[in-house]
Each structure stands twice: as structure tokens, then as C-alpha cells.
Image 1 (tube, rainbow, N blue to C red):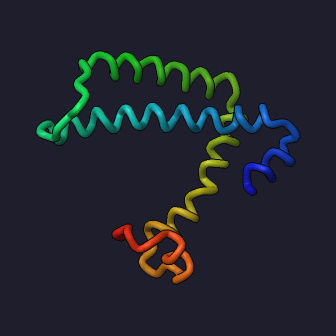
Image 2: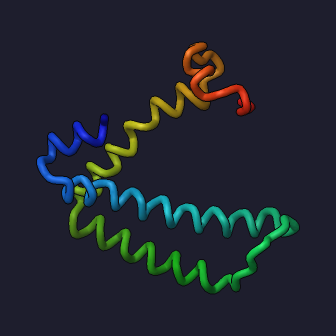
Length: 115
């Protein structure tokens, strides 16, 4: 529903893809960075796939360059993408972080998750 409303406001699906694309690449890089942090903080965790450390570092350097170039070349698009991402924060706070969740939401999310 939200994507459809955004598409109606922007008038073009390609514009919406540009807005959200920046945020996707932001999270991809943060995910790789998180893996490096885990490898540093918890070196004894089992790792089914072993990769040399230079691979994620090269990825992060290239990722940072592309992200900075995106911010420099189209700051408005990147800002709108970050705004779209920020609209998920209230739902996250309500559904995941809140101790007093509405019963209907608790049923919808299921009983298998532990808060």
C-alpha cells in the first residue's frame, strides 16, 4: 500500500526505485561491516564459509566510494530514500521494541518469537 502511494506521488516507478536503491546499498554495506565486527568480537563462532578478510574490506572501500558519489551527485534522491526508510521506524518500535504490544499485533506476529 505504501509503495503504491509513493508510486502515485512520484508518478514514475523508476524514481521510486532510485529512492529506495540508495537505502538498499546502504544496508548491504552495513551488513558486510557487521560481519567483520562479528568476526572481530566473536572469533570462535563457527563459520561454514571462510573468506579472506581482504574481500570484504575491498567491498567496503568500493561501497563507501559509490555511496559518497551517490550522496554527492543526487542528495535529494538519497534524502528521500532515507526518509522512506525512516517511515519504518515507528512500526519497528511498536512491533519489536515495545513491551506493551496490542494483542492483535501479538497474534499476527505469532507466538514463536521471544521478545
